[in-house]
Length: 283
Image 1: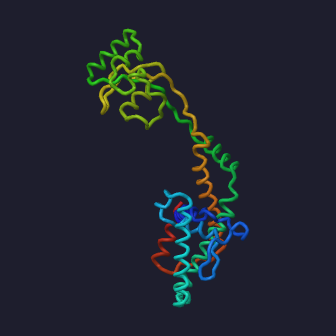
Image 2 (image 1 turned 90 degrees about the vertical axis):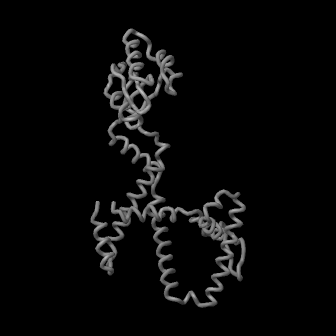
Image 3 (image 1 turned 60 degrees about the vertical axis):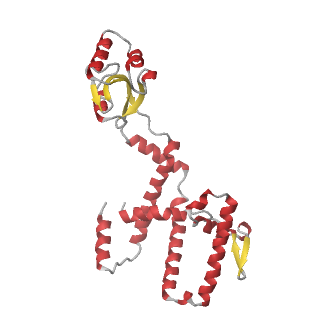
C-alpha cells in the first residue's frame, strides 16, 4: 500500500464513521430549534457534538447535547452575519466549500464501498488466514529461585542435585515475588523476560534445571523448565477490531488505486510533483 493512501485511510475513516452519518429523513431527524427562521435538526446537534472538545466527553449526555446546541446557534448566527457581509461570495470561501463538498462525498463513498461491505464473516476469514500463515511461537512454563549471590545459587543447585524439590526450595530460598508460588513464572514467550534469563531458559529441555547460576540485573537465578509448547494465537474477539482495520486499509487502497487510475491527475508544483511521485513509487 502506498504511504499517502494509508495516511488518508487512517485520517478519513474517523470522519466517515462520525456519529449521526445515517440521519437524513425528517421523521428520524426532528427539528429541535430555529435560528433566523432556519430549521435546526437533531442530526446537526450530532455533528456538532462530534466536534466538541474532548473534555465534553466527561459530561452527561444532556449537557453535551446542550453544548452542541449552543455551538450550532453560534455557528448559525455568525453565518448570517457572514452572509450579510457577503463573505460567501469570496473566491476563497467558494474554494473551501468545494473542498468540503468533495471531502464529504469521499467519506460517503468510503462508507458505502469500504466500511459497510465488511462483514463479521470477512473479519473472521482474514483472522483465520493470518493465524494459518503465522508460524507458531514457542512458549515455556518455568520456575526460578532468585538469590543475592552466586554462592547462594550454587548451594541451591547442590540441594537440587541431592534431590530436593524445586518448588519447596523456591519457597524457602527465593527472594523473588514468585517465591510463595514455588517460583512459578507460568508460561511466557520470548521477549517477556530479561535476555540473560531467556537465553538460558529457552535452551533448556523440559524438566531440566540450570546447572550453572544465571546472573541478571535482579540477582542470581536457578531456573527450571516445567513445560514447552506452542503458544495459542490471540483470541478472535480480542483482535477482531485490529483485523477490521487491516481490511479497511486494504480495501481503501484497492478503491483509491482504481479511482486514481480512472482519473487524470497532474501535479503542477515541481517540488510537490517530485515528492508525490517518489512516495508513490514505494511499496
